[in-house]
Length: 79
Image 1 (cartoon, rainbow, N blue to C red):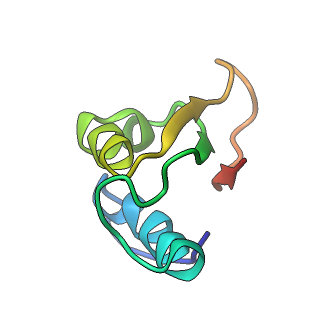
Image 2 (cartoon, rainbow, N blue to C red; image 1 turned 90 degrees about the vertical axis):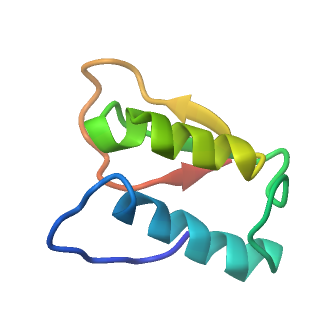
């Protein structure tokens, strides 16, 4: 995907690596641009927030949260 460092690490900053990856691999950011893509993420508050989930849904990405109590990955995986 992409790389992004932030002091605040809020739910909007969490989307930046996703957007970078979309530009790199899909060529654009827009509704449905990543249709068919699954995003594996942990159950962190930012990843499960309504804003994050709504954004990836709009982009056409399917949310694939890891299992509860699975060790943190601190990264995203696409399949």
